[in-house]
Image (cartoon, rainbow over the protein chains, first blue to last red):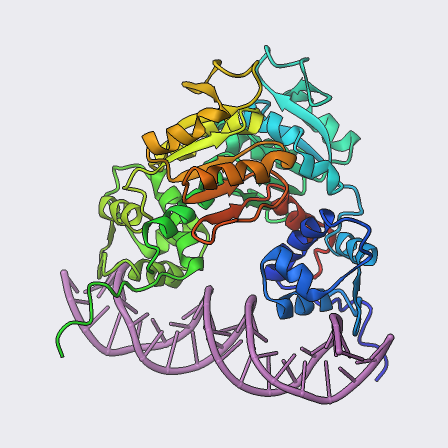
Length: 216
Length: 216
DNA sequence: GAGTGTGAAAACATTCACAGCT
DNA sequence: AGCTGTGAATGTTTTCACACTC
């Protein structure tokens, strides 16, 4: 039997993908005087089990050195590659209110290789003002910009009632994935488009459960 | 044998707790002309399996009626009770920038029974201004307010470099749980305090993984 | 000696499938 | 007839424990 490879990339479990992103954040803060890190140290930073770290990283190949640990810069690189953060995805934000403005200047995005290339609204008071280095544009410019900047990701921070319409607009414009921060859930009208609804109050509700019943 | 009950509350799995919060959001949007909902309908709204819905809700007791479904208002009540959203937790926000302002007026919070009772900063330009009905106060007032309003939850939206100091301040003030939206991770200096680090860029990174490798 | 990489075991989560209630 | 509640089956994730490498 000859080949059975190349195209068969080992799928990384969803739970692991989330932690890879976590690991990247954890080591971002590690001083670069240390050029190495062990699974135990990383586990402590990420508050997970060391075996978990090793298992997760093993999906990226044999990055570590037995008896030594993982080389920090190699690890950063490989995590970035695995998560597709080296492609430099472009994203746009629809809704220039507080949440949109906050995300536009969120330190975490640019650091991770996401370029926010546009910020849109319908409010004429906001249009042409500058937020986090971006000029707010009218939403009707969106279609052109998606093509022009090859935008892959749309971030929705409009009021709830406009979230679905905005999503439809983005999908019609050819965007491939949407992150919705509005509190109402939105649906994809096109199965090729990935939609992620982020519920900012969910974490608070989960916290509430554990506050309420510490015995459980 | 006599008792073996009362104190023994059946623990709800973490994955279920998250979905309970999701279900609550889904049914919030259902018109109240319908007084009932079946596991199948709710499953469609939440995009999960109907059996999942039934299993999850069964942790709250036998809420449904066979052959009929779940009574909507009972369901809402029970979800609120299970998640501890009826205690009316008070929360404060530290950091009156865009993110803090966005959260202060986030529709999702008040709806879910969280009262934001304070908004703090150190910037004298912001102090005494009004955001979302709240007067921004200097952070040195925090200790008194935590006691006065019996604040259970602290929300951190400061720049990264001040997040840990802010957390320490909140913990010293007697707060029981912290939600950190700053992009750097913070640690608890007191094991009795629950800390949740929310990484707004994580969802984007996960999205990036799936954009990058749709084959996986 | 120190720390990775990974089979095998254990824990956890989801889904099926159907008995049982209304 | 319709839909819940739940044992049992299946699938996924975490953890253990140790052979193996540097």
